[in-house]
Image 1 (cartoon, rainbow, N blue to C red):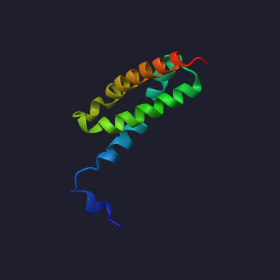
Image 2 (tube, helix red, strand yellow):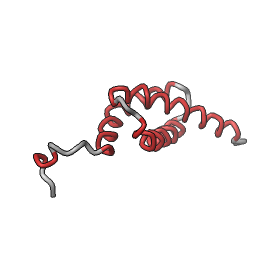
Image 3 (cartoon, one colour):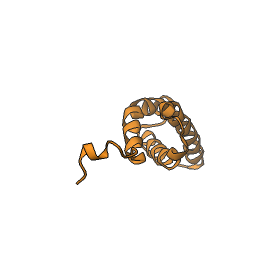
Image 4 (tube, rainbow, N blue to C red):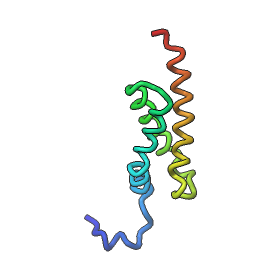
Amino acid sequence: MESESARQGAPPDPHETFIRLWTHHEPELRAFVRSCGPSAQEVDDVMQEVSVAALRKFSTLDDHTAFGPWACLIARYELLTARRRYARDRL
């Protein structure tokens, strides 16, 4: 197993960086999604879609300090997609 001191010179793992940023910003993202009015189940579904989309697009984010606003924009588009999906649901 690689020691922490050996990893000091290595570039940071993008997945580790994403997880750290996601866990830091997830409560504010969840509050944003919840404020848009969906039910608790819909909030969980949207948050799951946001996390998948953000992970897929993380390589396009140049400035990691802008992760919060960037993820909120993704959440906004996922909310719009979810609203369209639920609007078509007859139940």
